[in-house]
Amino acid sequence: MIRKLIINADDFGLCKGVNKAVIEAHTTGVLTSATIMANMPASDEAIALAKKTPTLGIGVHLNVIEGKPLSSDSIVELLLDGSGEFKYSAYKLAFKSFLNKKILKAIEVELAEQISSIINRGIKPTHLDSHKHFHCFPPVYRIVCSLAADFGIGAIRWPWEPATVCLSDWPPVEFSDKTRAFLARQMALSCQRLDSRFIKNDIFFGIAHTGRINDAFWSEFSKTQFIGVAEVMTHPGYPEGLRKTRLVGQRKVELKWLCEPAIKQFLAEADIKLIHYGNIDGNGK
Image 1 (cartoon, rainbow, N blue to C red):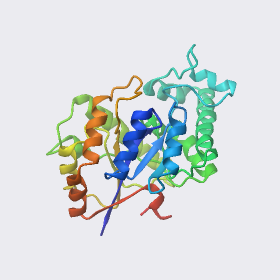
Image 2: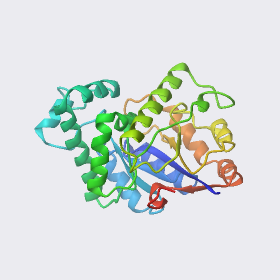
Image 3: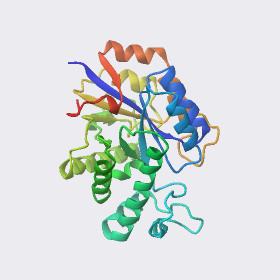
Image 4: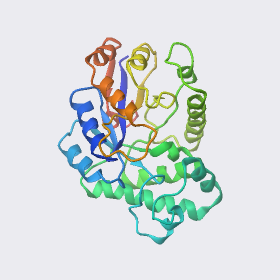
């Protein structure tokens, strides 16, 4: 059985440096997919680049955590600070989404606007994912599934990363990385129970090693005996135009190894076929 792998770059459209790196990682490396942040300054450039690169799968990186909203609906102001930017961290947004139906409505309105914006600019999204995986908060996940159905989008990222990635021969990670992966794994299981229609990947990698998708990671990944479709989340980039982010220098490291010929060889020797979400058939395999 040929195993299939989606290698996605998050944050396409964040800035010129990220956009440049995404295209480079696809045209000279192993990157197969990218998700656009529709509300970020370089999203128009990202869309223009995507149109010139039809072999790159393009999804939407839903975001109500950083930057300014696209929607002008007054209800979205519930998510904003005095300067008109999103004010809640992922954790606060999770808490608010459980308690406040108006917050959920504001999230729904803004996410619908972000998806519409990408489609109206000529891109048919292959899938949806989100900044900091907030789409996996159960109340928000229901909204995202509904939007996927409304817009005819066939897949939503399922960030279920096996616990063994934090152990054994994988590059060592900090306790905070293990905690982040554990929380995402639990939310992913909740999503599967709530609505599995749009879950098209069987396993996921890149949470525990966010910012450290390097040669050691790829070497261990190529030995992993997963079955079906896997996704690896990456964050390639150059520093040009980067906003405040915990990933700066790490982006260039990830780009280097996405473009390294040895990585392509690792994957080929492991009989892993590179795809994007748009290549998955209606049954998800």
